[in-house]
Image (cartoon, rainbow, N blue to C red; front, side, top):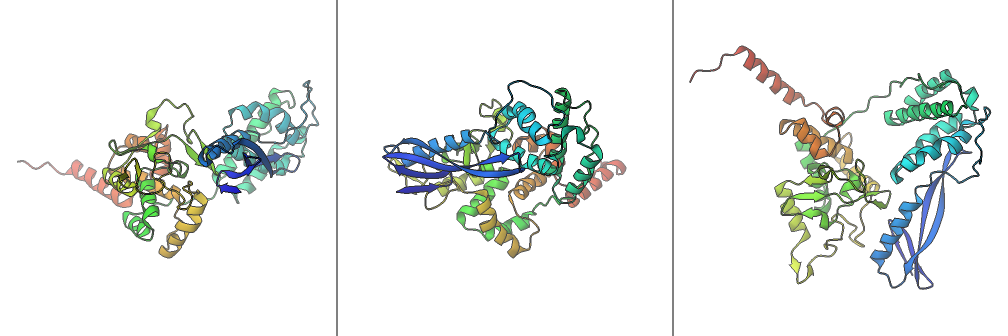
Length: 397
């Protein structure tokens, strides 16, 4: 007997729940990420399926903190000028930084390092050349997004600076590397008319999910981890207690820690009308339980109908949003577009500070520069309003 969920594979063996899952391990010799299977007994068979899944999720979370294959570490430090970049990163640079990496950062760091080490991994530290690194970054900018290029730039600077600090290099060859110009990325938003056309194509649950996503400006990791216990109908708010990333639940968000003290980063306002729709979607109580399945406090609001598991971002993008995008001829339709749409359309209804609070950014600069896009019609109204105030005399009553 076995139970398959999105948090790994659970199987009953010798009257115990045994979990199986895969972890991504970075191989510094090849500059690639390998998948390795892990397993662990998570508890006796008498545990409920839900509890066993929670224990397995915790094991998966702990297993993701090792970003590279364990190797022998030298007991005594001795600077070797012939050490390759790959060896230095594994033995001297990454151990100093892995303590600060959250599980979500491990995969991101491995991805960035895979680019760097594929090109320079076998080059000795003393032979690293500034011009060659700049030319590589320039070529990278022609094929990858700005964030990937900048991460590679920052990592190169950090690695070489640490090599200088540990006396492997006399000076940092990456210190004056320049960030190359990258391809322009269109920051698409939806008009109200386009959004109404989108939700008209969706079933009840997915339509409600997209309206929550837009109105509450939620990241997909936050949206898909919402449980009914997080929904306060009386206050019309959500409380963010956990997020989901690559099938694993985490007790923190992109901008908060597990013990976050700033409640404004964890509390999300819900429009009154939408809160009413959520309450009706959940349904009334029948005795001591809900009349509908998967509507208890611990159940996910947006779930797999068959098992009640949380949904996966990639599945929604490919199975739900992409077909609608193609049918309506939209340039882009994803979760980022929804969040950016809310920020952009909010300009005429509140201040930048209001929008920043709703999007739960720690800095208003991110809100204004990355999410709030200009609206030509709104700019035109502003120009006319200011000009009228400047040149026209106020009417006398």
